Length: 336
Image 1: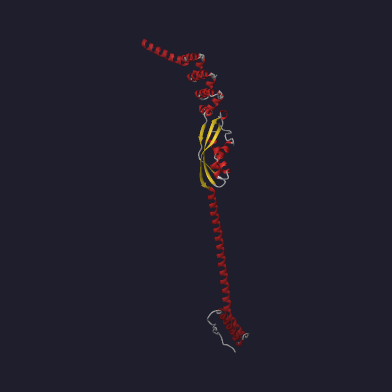
Image 2: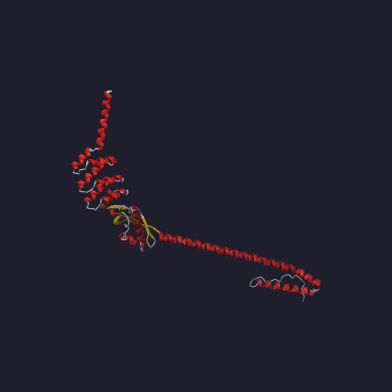
C-alpha cells in the first residue's frame, strides 16, 4: 500500500513539473534575457494560457529587435491570433529595412492576411519580375495579321498590393494595347521595322493603374507574320456576291421560263378558239343555205377567193427558191 501511494505521488509530482514547465516557460524567459529582449514571466504565461505559441513570438521578437525593428509583443500576438504568418512578415520587414524600402508592420500584416506572400511581394519590389505573355494576334490596316509576343517587367507596388489587380489583369491590358497598336499601323511592315513603337504606345497608356504592380518596361520578344486576313475577307465577300448574283440570275431565269410557259398556254388557248371557230364555219354555211341567205354562186365565189388566197400564200413562201410556185389544189369548181 505504501509503494502504491509512493508511485501516485511520484506521478503527480512529474505531472506537476511538466505543467509548471509548460505554463512557466523558464527556458524562454532565460532566452529573452540572454538576447537582451527581456519579457516578464507573466507575459509568457499569458501566451500559454491564450494559446499563442510563445516560442514563435520570442523567436521573431528577438530577430526583429536584433535587426533594429521596433516590433512589440502585442503586434505579434494579434497577428498570430488573426491567422497570419509572423515569421514571413518579420523577415519581409527586415529585408525591406536592408533594401531601404519603407514597409510598416500594418501594411506587411495586411498583405499577409490578404492571402498574398509578403516575402514574394518584397522580392518583386527589389528585383523586378518578368512576365512572359501569350501570343497576341493583331491585324494591321492593310489586312495582314501579326503574331506578337511580349515580355513585361513589373515591380511590386506595396501601396496597392492589398486590393490591387494581379498578373492576369496586367497581361490582359498589355494584350489589348498590343492589338490596338498593331491595328493603328497602316502597313504591317512598319511594325516589323519598328517593333519598339508597340512597346512605347502600350507603355504610355498607364496600364498598371489599379493593379498591385508597376510596369517597368514592355519589350517585344517576337513578331511573326500570320494570315492575310484582308484577302480572306475579300475572297469571302466575292464568294458571297457571286452566290447572290447566281441566286438573282436563277430567279430571273425561272421567271422567264414561267412567262414563256404562260405565253405558250395563252397561244394554245387562242389556237383552240380559232379551231373551234373554224369548226363552226361549215355549220354556219349550211344554216345560210337553208335560210336562203347564201346561194350556189355565192358559195362558188367563196371557194374561188379561198383558193386564190392559198395560191398567193404558196407563192410568197417560195420566193427566192428554185422551185416554181405550184398552184394549190382547188377545193371547189372554178368560174370563168
